[in-house]
Amino acid sequence: QVQLVESGGGSVQAGGSLRLSCAAFGYTYSIYHMAWFRQGPGKEREGVAAIYTPGGSTTYSDSVKGRFTISQDNAKNTLYLQMNSLKPEDTAMYYCAADSRTYTPWHSLNPEYFTFWGQGTQVTVTS
Image (cartoon, rainbow, N blue to C red):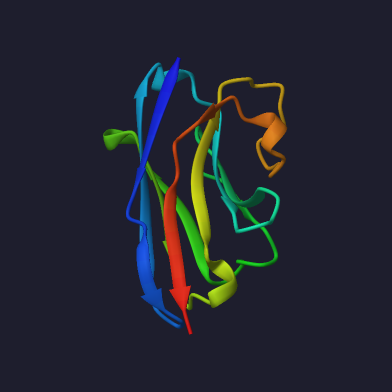
């Protein structure tokens, strides 16, 4: 089992930046890929960015490409999401997710490919 705890959310003006963190606990050695998802009011959960944990390859949704950066610190078992040039439409609850199944496509932003989820951290961007 893997437990995930997000932090770093808050309220920021449009154009500002935030960095989210996701600390992983438990059988972290088994993690194959991790990702950030978000869910805005009245919207479906959306994949934002994913990372292949053994090698560090990354992928992003078109809506955040060039503004957000996903990264990891293996020594700290922590995943990050650096968010720059934030827009009001980025307002959402942000979730960290992980999975250990090596047969799943690491680059997928489909929530079905992730078993472990954090509780989420709220990001609010004001205009």
